[in-house]
Length: 322
Image (tube, rainbow, N blue to C red; front, side):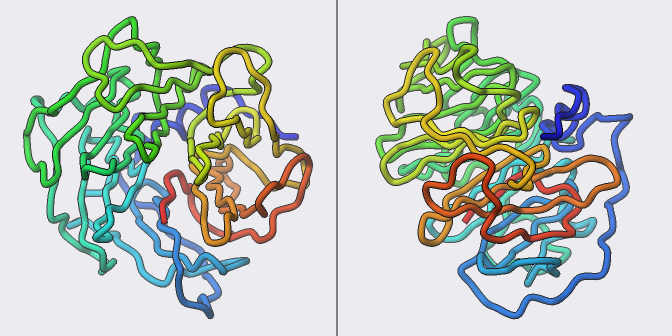
């Protein structure tokens, strides 16, 4: 099983922002085989400057069916991605401390319809994004060690309606975020913990529970997803693994399932989402010189198991959403 230095992994976690002096030039793709199927789709942030729409059934080298990319998009260090019930696309823009919002139709060099950025926003290295049942935008901030929450339709240099930050929160380089049906907020911290906050948490609020410790298998956790039962799935960037925890798990608890090993195809995994039929889609940032990919696992997959399918020849995928 491949393992990478924390420095390499952290560059992936912060979505190409500030690594090696930054990258102001959008990367380019190789030649792809066009997809032959339609939706349902997954939406992936790739290479820091691209949002790609990819059929969930796709396998092998792929040319995304639609993309958002180009100078008008303002994409730079694109990391976490989420979609609201109307299909609008929210992207954490890590390199410039912003969140961009695009309409549902991916249309190339598209200007965002909303852009949250500025000193009042409290954004600091935004990494993960999620939309709760009330339509609020929830953002994790890796360099600010905070969660900022914005109302529906927020735009410009606007202050968050809620900020969760402080020593009691346990937030430490937070990355991926997910929200359950009750509005509780689940955050993975790359220093090795999952913190769960109440829907109404604010300020220097202690989490409802924390998962951390040597038994957990957490190793630079970077993304988190929930299934319909509330079980937690975590991508571990430095462990090249995916670990699952029971819905009520807390403390130094062992995962109920671990996907890891040379057959899995996992390579600096970053984000994950439950797709059609309960299949688990995982973005793999990979390492310099090696194309990124999305690996897909069957429900209940465990151990050194080969993926059902691999979507290959991506640049450096991080965020993923349905």
